[in-house]
Image 1: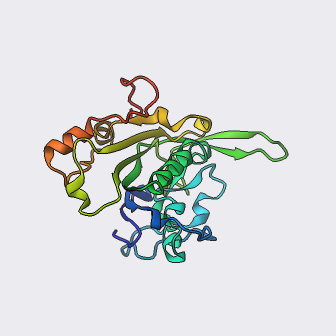
Image 2: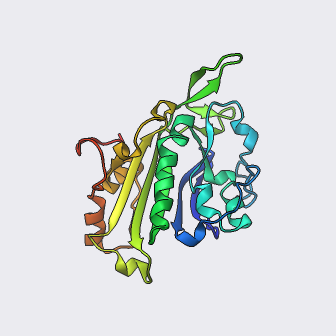
Image 3: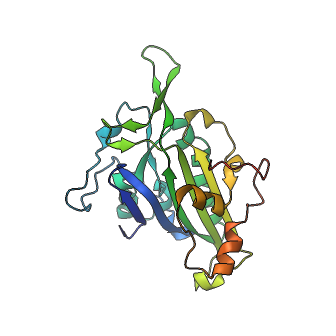
Length: 246
């Protein structure tokens, strides 16, 4: 599905996107308020399930944006588009509100620092850990689930993201070479990772491709594509041998 704000691949059997892809630059980031509600996507083909916001209620999982809301705050229409439920997956609150949001904040820092980004993100696998409030208590109980909404929506095991970072300019594809910065991340869908540094989840595009079966950056010359796929961003924390996509 190609929208003005992003493109996505929707998986009807899983009840959410396989992946969402978008371009981010400083002018996309504005002062629009967060949309007041999530909405079903009425542009899905006839016969596809229409996920509604109550499908997530009391599930223990956040309505996790793939294309982030703050990446589209230049106009009301653009922000509203990020709240379509074809752009949402069940995300453990500690993942969504912890290292994942800190990664999203970093993306916007890059965009506001003279860069433009090409981003593709999604999730794979089945089974995550959320959390629910315990009535009358401050603590929360952990919720392990593979499905929500009476089985209509699959809870992913792992969230992933790949970013290509370029200085602002023109003719973007032609400017990408083996030295271009790429950042790839695989993050377990567990609420327990709330305090973790997102840099510990940095991996390679090759590891993401092996886990998802996707051929990313396929419009690039094969030599450049292979070089970028093998790169692990220099800001990574932890042993290079570690593969968080597994």
